Every structure is written in structure tokens, then in C-alpha cells.
Image (cartoon, rainbow over all chains, first blue to last red; front, side, top):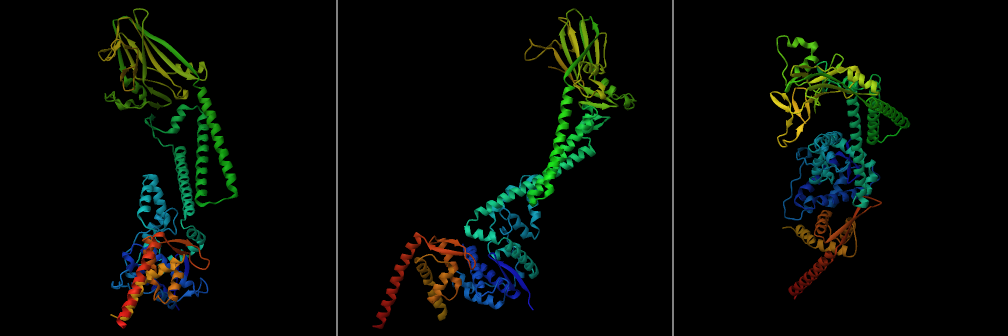
Length: 515
Length: 111
């Protein structure tokens, strides 16, 4: 009773007795050694292997007939001992390795039998004895993360020879191997060959295999797009789920003293009901898109088709359109609530002196914001001017906006007039004005000094509707406005002294800047 | 120094010329060439032929094309190139000269 080994030689399947396989293997290895200095060694080996196929097929009853060692001996006798292949007849006979198991040299070849593109991944997999799927995924990941997968692949494709002969294919898979692993590997190879018999014959028929490689390139592009779509869908799905269900606090605006989340921010912007509708709309569009992307990706990867697919695509498309309708509605409705601008103004006082001082108090703004947290400053500590509190703060149902505009105009009389302008937008004139009137801006005129905060606040239920506060200061001709001990109006630009600025902006941290 | 070895060397020497002679008559694939050489009793083992064909192909003396076979593996049909024709005529002249030289030497030593 003898074991048999399933192998393929140049794409033709044979079943060999284990002994016969060993002899053939040793013979081919000896040929490789003898031809090692020959420039066309690969081609000669291919020719010899084709001849072996031809000789083995003669007098063979069928592919399933087991080839015995005597048959291999006959074939070797016809072909001649390895030294006959050498160009130099005097060359001493290369020692034939007695057992393949002793050989440890392993070479890196491209495996074009199982390749999608150039067989690089298959070759790497064969060299390290791991599943080719891992290598392919690694290449794709490298490409996505660093973009480096593609140049590495092309480089390996160019510099690595493909394994053409059975011996090279064994070398590629790496020896030493035991007979069991050779057996399983060759069994796989035979199955593959049977499956791809047509492909192989085409490859030889055309001689170039051009159409075949084109088809493979199309296939690999298809698979790559498939993987990309699946990953895209997955990322979208996970990202969307995090934003909808976890709602992380990532936005650098403070609400109740903490970083805010998108959900909280949008609730400051969109009115009740519309905010929910917006979330549902985004959810519908996002989930529909990610599912369609993943479904299409899987279809490209595994080329399956099913009856439910059409219904699935239709349902997801419908959900997406619904989401789009919701978003459009919320968008139009919110847009309408910006349509009308309302402006309220109030003169808070006049001053008859020669110069008016600005006293900008950022701490007033922050204090206003932090009334609930005054305990922080219990021991006489006050916040610094550099206190960074973002553009937007919200606390206990109020929204705090940093930044005040200042507008200087020439007074019609000989008095300074200080006026506060509050602006807001709304669906109607009435609503806009109601919003404007709800703005709280701490500002007083005491003697020659205007004390004012660097920001203002309004109820969060009003939503953010472009609320603004402007300080309008009427300055009599020839008189000045002082900030920090120097005149800021009429402010002369260094580069163009004849031009004066009549607009200024005070940012949240108390910085005064002329336009 | 044994006879067999010398015989092998002599055969090997003319093998290239003989293969080109076969291909001079037209395209042929290796097994066909081997058959003809075997019939002419010029061949001991096939192993010598394959490296020779590849070497000649690399020298651009020969060229080949693949053809599918109904009965076995695909066949490499070898053909002589223009350069090959010239190469062959050169060898043929040399062979003729050698043949004459050997005949002449034999006649001289007989007489």
C-alpha cells in the first residue's frame, strides 16, 4: 500500500505514487542546479516539464491513473541525466540532493496561478504560508491608510519573477516541507487547475494572455471598489450612530461649562420639533446611504444577486428621499426665520466733556455668564482678560455671544451720544424685534466713561438668529474717544494718516480693534 | 577516456547543425524534432536538445509560437529566422568542408 500525491505539471493534473513524486522532484531539482548558470534556465525547465507531460500522457489510460516510479524512471531515461542539460560536458556532475526536506532555500516568486493582478499577494502568502486574503487586505489597508500599498505592490510586481515551473512553485512555497503539506497544497492546486482549465488554455492559446489580464484588472478594480464601499458604509454607519446615540461633546463652544455636542448646538439653532425632524432626516439619509454603500460593496465583492435586493434598494432610496424632504423643509423653515431683520435702539446717555473713555470689561461678560459659579471667585480672584471662552457659551437656558461692534458717527450737536443697537432676525418684523428686545447687554455711561461687557446674552429659546449688539457713539467734531489712555477715535492709520476709522470691534477677551 | 563519452561529444557537436537542418525544412515542435533525430539514430537522450533550442532561440537563430494541441500540452513550434538561415548556410559549408577533409584524410591514409 502506497500513498499518492496529486500534482500539476504546467497546468496538467497527475496523480503520482509518493516514491515516483520524490524521484521526479529530485530530478527537477537537479536540473535547476545544473542550469543555474544558464540564462534561459526557466524556459528550458518549462520545455522539459511540457515534455514530461507529453511523455506521461502517452500510454496513460486517464488522468486518474496513478503514475508509478517505474514510469518516472522511464521518462528520466528518455530525457537523460541532468548533466546532459549542461552546456559544458566536462563540468562535474552537480550533487543531487537526496532529500528535499534538507533544502532550506526559499525564494520569493509571484504566484500567477492564484493571482488577481500580478500574483504579488499570492506570492507573499505562499512564502509565509498564510492565507492570501490577509495579504490582500493588508495591501488595501496600506493603500487606504498611507497610500503606500500601490507603490509597494508595483515595485514587487516589477522586481519579482513569477513562478513558472513546478519546481519554482515549490521553491516559492518554501521548503523544507513535509510530504503531507505538499500533498494538500498540490491537491488544492489540482482543484484550482480543474476550475481554471479554460483560463489556462486561453492563456496558452493567445500566447500573450492580454484579454485575461485585462479581465483580472477589471476584477481587481471591482473588488477594490467593493472593499472601499463596504468600509465607507461601515465608517458612515459607525460615525452616524455615534453622533446620533452618543452625541459626543466635540464642538469647542461651552454649554453649561463643558464642550458641547452637535446635538446640543443644533438645539440652540433649530426650533423645537424642527430639530427632531432634522435629526430624523439626517438619520434616514445617513443610514440609507451607508447601507446602500455596504450592500453595493458586498455585491461587487461576492457578486451575488437576490430578489430582496431590488426591494431593499427601493426601500433605502425611499427612506433617503424622505430624509431629504425633511431636511429641505427644516432648511426652508429656518431660512424663513432669518428673513426679516429687526433692530431696536436706545440712547443710554449723553456727555458734554472733551473726551469720552471706553472701559471694556470682559469680566463683566464672564461674570454675567458665571453668575451661577460666582463661588469660583469667592476669595477675590478675578478671571484674566485672556480667559478663553470660545465664541459661544450657553448656560441655564441663555446663550452668551462674545464680541461687540462699535460705530462712531459725527454728532450733530456738541454732546457725546451713546446709543445701544440690538439686532436680531425673525420670520416677521414682530418676532425679530421681540428677539432683539430679549438681548441683555450690560452697559452704563458714568460721567465720562462707558462701561460695557464684551458680549451679550439672550434666552436660548429664541434660538440663534444672528443677534448682534452695536454701540453707536456720536462724537462732536474735534473731540476724542479714549481707550487704554490713547485716542481710538478719530483713529489715524499709520500708513494713511488722513483716513480715520469709524468702526471698531471688541472681542470677547476685551481686545479693541479698529477696522 | 572511454568510447561512449567521445561518441556523445561528437554527436553533441553536430546536433546543433542537425536540428537546424530539420527546421530548415519547416516549422517543428520539440517532440517532432526528437522523433526525427531518434530515427536518424543521432539521439541518445532528449535532455541535450532542450537547452540547445533555448540557446538558439536566445541567439535569435530560432523563434517560436505556441499552438494548442488536442492531445496533450500546448506545443512550441520553432521556426528559423532570417539570421538563422544565414547561420545554417554557414554551418552547412563548414560541415561540407569537414566532411571533405575527413574523407580526404581517410583516402590519404589508405593509399
